[in-house]
Structure formats: structure tokens, C-alpha cells
Length: 403
Picture 1: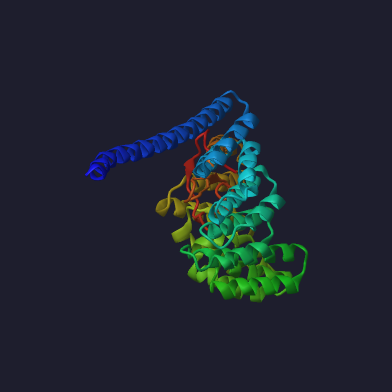
Picture 2: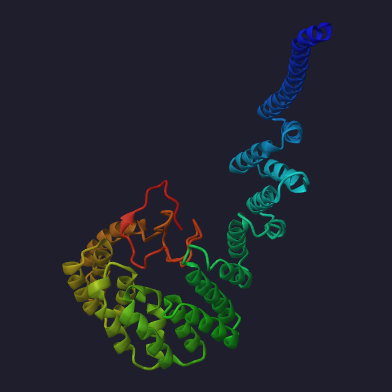
């Protein structure tokens, strides 16, 4: 009986002691966690304070300490690196991302992310060789496509068209279906360089590849004609360029001078000019008007040019057409030795020229960059085929960049 009574009394005591022991252990664990949190908070606040105090090196060291205490703060480093890069502080961004790349205690995905961000840092800093090395370290995971896209951007900056072609081909399976057109442009760039060096065979090979990738590629067709002209075969150039005149007449201004040169070489300048004039009904608002006017003055005389500009003003009124009509009238007055009339016309002509000289010609449909000449690749956003060959007749605000 005494043993049973002792057991009954000791059971609650042992249960109580066990509960006290577990509670004590939990308190110890909570205390340790609290100490760790305090260390992290202290290091984080110290890093941010140093950052705000313009002491980036010490700030990064403090934030590195946070990352060592808690690997989840890797995202903080990515955020800081992106912030530095956006502010143009590429050296700081490079140091943050370089630290992450060199760490061995983070996941493969985070290392790929760090290599990608580091490549972008180097690209922003203009260190293209280092950017290429870092971007090529990115594995086949989530950041693979982004790294290849950055490499493609870099190769275009370097004008390394062969590497750009390889990168773009690797991206052709992505959602962006414009890569074949970009590849065609890369081959066209190679063609232009080959023609400049008078390497006819290399130019022919490159332009044929452009047409093979994108049949009826407008720039490729233009360059095929230029290749024929370089080979002293103007009649074949004309036959090629007739595809532009028949199917893409809006692009005629890009080849008008070479078109007329080909016809002149074939002793048939009147027919070449007639073909260009025929397209003024639909495209008199663009650069074609100025080119046709120039050749009408040269071949047919100012009287015909004045009549042509009068007809254009009836169906497509514009400041350029009015200016060209005044130019023709001025030449007619000079030819007739009408000095007073020529002087009056010149006063109006000079005023029109002041206005038309500030006209905006082309506007990028992607970024809005305004230019006074046509570009296949926008100088502002580096996108391809974003300029319409039709010129906009509007005035350029003083705050808008233009070329």
C-alpha cells in the first residue's frame, strides 16, 4: 500500500518536472533565436545606415554578414544590386553580384541569377568581354533565355553579327517570333560590310541567306540590287528593284537614287523617272517627292517640275510640296531674267525652308525616338523594323531627341 501511494504521488511530480524541462528548453531555443534575430537586425540596420551614409564598401560587408546568418537574405543582395545599377553605380552593383557568384552556400538557381545580373552590370559598364564571360556562365535554368537575350544585345552593340546570328538562332524557339527577321538583318549587315570591302562573293552568300530565312525580305531585296550594281549589271538590279516598286512602293525613297543610276547606266533615264513619278499619287508625302523633284529638274526642266508640284498640292498638300513649287518658280524666274519676281519668290522660299528644316521625318513606333533619316534599327531602343518608310511632316519639340 505504501508503494502504491508513493507511485501515485510521484507521477504528478515527474510530469511537472518534465513539463518544466521542456519549457526551459523552449525558452533557451527562443532566446537563441532572439539573439540570432537581433544579430541579423543589427547587421541589416548597420548595413543600411552605412549605405545611406555613402559608405558602400562597409555597407556591403555588413550585408554580407546578414547573408551568412540567413541565406534567405540573398534576395536583399539582388535588390540592392539592381538598385545600384539603376542609379548608374555599376561598381557597387558589380561588387554585390560578384560576392554572390563566388559563394558556395547558395543554390544553383541563385548562382545563375547572380551570374546573369553580373553580366548585365558589366554590360552597363561597357566591359563587354567580362559581360560575355559572366553571361556564358549561366546554366540552362530559369535565367538561360534572359542571358542569351543579353548576349544578343551585346553582340549587336559590338556589331559582331556572326555571334549575334548564333545567339538569335538559339532563341528562335522562344515566344518572340521576330528573331528570323533579326537574323535576316544580321546577314544584311554582313552584306553591307562585304560590299564596302568589295568582297562580292561574301556579300552574295550573306544576302542569299537573308532571303532564304525571310523570303521577300525588303532590305535583302534592296541589297541584292546593290550587289548587281557592284557587279556592273544595272539591268538585273532594275529587275530586282521592280519587286520593291510593285509590292512595297513605300520603300522606293530608299532606292530612288540608285534606281535612277541603274536606268541612266542603261540609257533609259526617262523610263526610270516615269516609274517614280507614277508612285507620287500614293506616296507624295514622303521623301520620294524630294527625289522625284530633283530628277525632274535635271531631266525635264523647272517648268515641268512646277506643274508636277502644283498637281501634287491638289491631292496631297504639304509644306515640302509647296517649298518645291516655289523652288521651281524661282528657277523659272531666274531663267527668264525676272529679277524682281525671283527676289519675291526667294523671300517666301527662305521662310519655307526655315520651317521645313525642322520637320521631323521618322518616328520609332517602339520608343518614339525621332530621326531625320531612315534606320532599319532604331538608335534609341535598338529594335529592328520600327521605322515606317513614310515620313511624318510635323515639328520636332526642342526636348525630343532627333538625329
